[in-house]
Image (cartoon, rainbow, N blue to C red):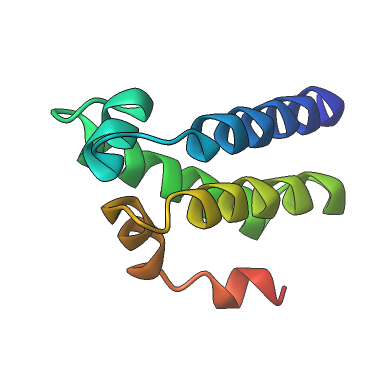
Length: 99
């Protein structure tokens, strides 16, 4: 099970790296449209941020928690010019990161 989660997180990291590295005409809205759609961005990214936090906080192994942190870094590093970063800045992930 943990190897499946690790592979999923690794795949998601690569996907985000590729999608977010592309140059877009309207960076913020284009990235939001590709990842979640303009109508569903709030629900999708609140759920995404919650999932990342819960895996980092209570993931089964250190490897899984590290992969979740890598996914979060891939998203925040690649989407720094968009409003998507705000879904992570409004959360206090520090306590679960130092665990």
